[in-house]
Length: 490
Ligand SMILES: [Zn+2]
Image 1 (tube, rainbow, N blue to C red):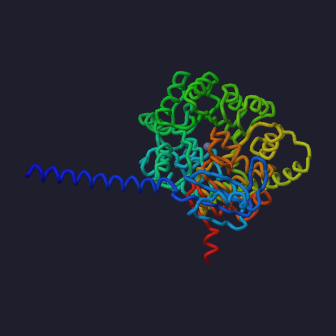
Image 2 (image 1 turned 60 degrees about the horizontal axis):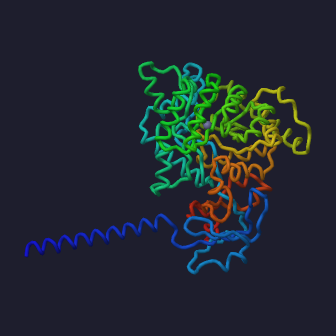
Image 3 (image 1 turned 180 degrees about the vertical axis):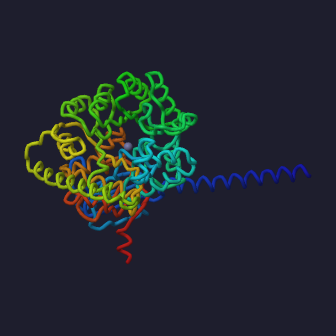
């Protein structure tokens, strides 16, 4: 009798557990996918690849993916019963933006002038050093905030290229994919491969190795380069990031590229000066990040080898003056220096860009130091036929702007430097998707792709600054933001 009772009790528990489990499973399923199909209607839809604009557009979304795109009259008959409609009025729909070069797990504040003059520990110090030695948990919460802010500004995919500790960006990616937090799709690189002294320097020798290992993988010979790629592979990275400088040799970078390609990973190489750019080209990198000093001959080699040029228009215009103003007291010497430099750069941009857009000849590139050649570089890259994309390279604390606002504010500067608006949009949608190797998933509004969409009120081709006023964001078929709706309900 007692035995029977026990058995019955056991069965009840099992069935209770079973129904509880079914409940959890159903709830997870509900959370994981949008249950009802969604029809989005908008006055216009821009296809960045062709530049075509579809009027009175409709996008049908099922299970987080785009099912059909076309004029409302064509799509409407295929909309299943129970579908939800989101009407964006006269807005322009675009694919979600792709920031192909960012740093979500760091937000340095520029050190005060006096501090910089007295104390030097390398780039982005002391913020980078603090980030490395503080708790990784603390840092990942920063990354979580930056990721969410990027998404809210319309960036639905980022490629995070270093400065995230050992596993900060791979873990953030996985947490977002698991629905634990909200953020863009992340292609994570984990630790940056560098030669010694590329970033932090002059550390306590007793602690230096341990500190460096938290943030970087050191390349010292081809064997160690291969090993570094394997360590990142163990971390399940999506891409390998290498910083090329005078100390990096072609055989070392070839070892990285071979090992990465064997694992079907692309290699993004930070290269600013001519020497490093040549190392990246000779070793067969997949993309060159920054590329400031690229010569016409190098651009031609990149085009012939199919290497992407990834623009990072981070510091153009008055970007650093704005950051300095909000974070440090500028001396009577620094302030006029900054303002003078901003004015000269801006003037040069807009004057030259206007002339070049009208077909004026290119100025002699060798006549100016590289930081003043940016406008020229944009034009030369466009003319060379090399494949290009753009990333914000954002990693700064920008007072008064969210990380998303700061990131997106970088892209219109390419237009100021003479890039046609449509090409700016391509650089952060279709072109970027191809550079990432994700052209089958993201970058355009086409059937079969992820439902990552944004909308702006005006025409972004006529006014590229519309990108800084994204008012609707959808990722994976889920609405992240819809300011149009807010306006309608008022
Ligand atoms: Zn960077």
